[in-house]
Length: 116
Length: 112
Image 1 (cartoon, rainbow over the protein chains, first blue to last red):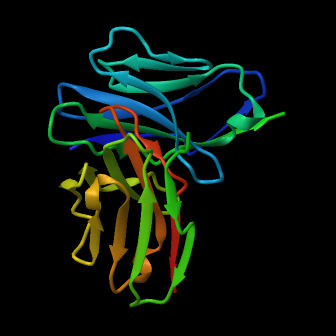
Image 2 (image 1 turned 90 degrees about the vertical axis):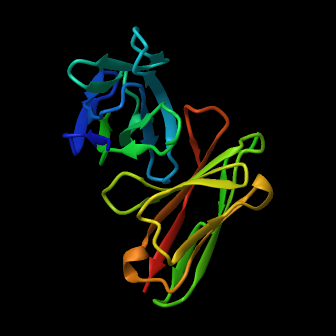
């Protein structure tokens, strides 16, 4: 079984500042993928970034980077230069990469509010 | 290039009625997923299709739930004899690779 824990129900950040959203995970799988999704108030889940458990380098996608610490089982999302449009719910998710299971397991999410 | 579409966007029904939701995936995506999201929670996996074959089902998918994907194109999720606990957002996602899943806007179900 897999579990995702997001301990920050809500976060505030000043516009143009960087912010880190925490995510820890638990799994017995050797090979797995970690994902971050953004969910604006409109409801649609928007894929942000992916990190494979065997990837040695941290993933980056524009202003998003994933701080992956395998020994600590953490996969924190860093958003640089926050924008007002970044205000949304953010979900960390994972799934095993071995054959047989394709389901994503999500955390409860963190609500990010960007202050002008 | 259109994304995943879902219809209807909102559905209000009375307890005991049957409801059906439709999902149209991105055209070249052969994998399709259904999730359910209740207030204050992350999405929970319901079921997965690869082409027309339903390969994975969650224990959340009780006997009242059935999903189909005829011809490997669009998919339907039917809930029979709805209960108030079925009130949630039902999300559909599709993918081509084994990695990122692209989500639709969801169908919000309210059971009165």
